[in-house]
Length: 438
Image (cartoon, rainbow, N blue to C red; front, side, top):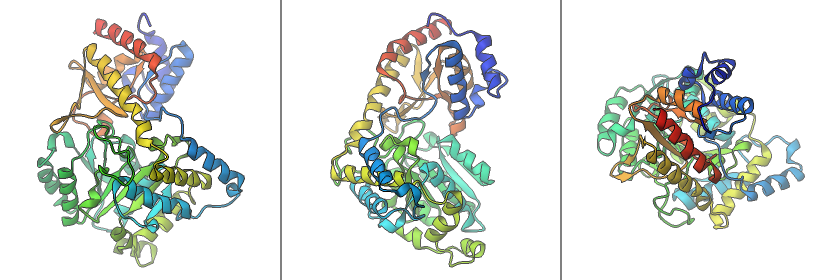
């Protein structure tokens, strides 16, 4: 690229996608942004440096593909799957969680979902139905923007705060302030964090767990990027170090585990929710009154909530995930080693950005440098996130603003998954052009 893209053409494409012009890109949804970029590429014949969507940039694990193929050939495509999940999946999910998180959760406490998106949607619904006096979800931000959209769709109240301002012991005071209101039914965070790639420490998880027990709040732990803090090697099954988890400090928790990033199996929309056994068996009056039963969490979560969202999870995809869990636990599939490629890409992209006058917005993880991984955050001078993306779009670079993630800082979220080696030089060239102009 020798010069910025034609402004009028880019603006016209934005308008065709429901925006008034490129200045509204900061408010666009991720999928809307994807549509804009694809249309610009098609119209103008330019390949973007795509960092706006968190899509796997590695091939789907072959073990999963083969298992799914075998399942289809065996005839599962004509049969409704059990809403509770096929036995091989729940069994292997239990073993996988033991192997890589060192948690003892029985197979009966696992249920498949159509990606962790469905798992989170169902969780928000369950947590705000089970007690009539608890109507609010707390987001420990920054976080995945669509999860707040899920709350909006359901009419569920939510609160949030940016954890960067409350790391370590400061987190306890902030959580006490919010949880003591008595309105919070559940709280959610991702670890590693989307979008910053910060990781909550054992001290912070102990605080969250202890206060969750104190105020009887359910923690939803989003482990989409399980063991992808590459500052230490967590690739060996049944050997420490393990993925840190709030489950060591409270029984009030559930976990979202997705095949999308761990196994690059995003296209088949397959995940599991792991319920803490104590939570699974607990009975709630809100469920009992609404559904006319004993109010048990597990049964209502599966048979009254997940069932109406989708009458089961694709049969063959369950066999794929079971096979990948089994292979990882056996030590035959090094998914941590495979996904380490994202750390390599992130380190290279950050180096190019800093060289051209950009900065990393969330650069520290308590007293450490933030890990390199799937996502990172970046900014330029004193530009807001909206101002920055409104300009970068004309230089063939796409990313989303931090504002929808609940961040209090200005900048953009970049995902390195779709960047190929041949694009590094072009990224450098485009950023040089941008920094010359601004």
